[in-house]
Image (cartoon, rainbow, N blue to C red; front, top):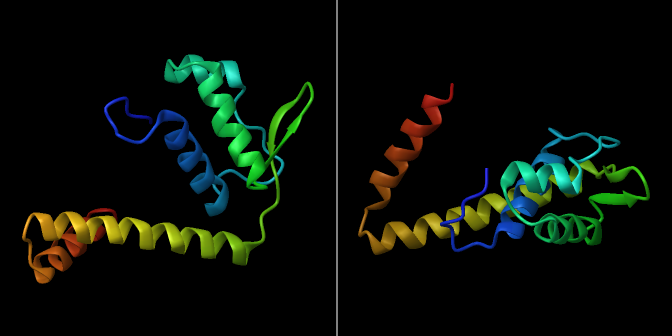
Length: 122
């Protein structure tokens, strides 16, 4: 789901969500991504926006554009995928820490909230 109210550009949101899905294995190698037109219509954005996201994923080596077939997910080395996902976790934690410090929340309260939210998904 993309957010028009986010400060992150929509193409970046699309790219980040697709990247996470590919790296986690949720979208396996060989699977086609939704067509540019279909995804653009579903998200109510320009096909240029989706094209930019897909081209960035291709530049990262995660997908390959095939004429007449669309964009297809490439195989990703599991070690590379794990490292990329771990790096993303670090980015999110850095952001969490910055926001928590702005809110003057103590570390133990953040730990407690993390445990609560983590347990909610079990």
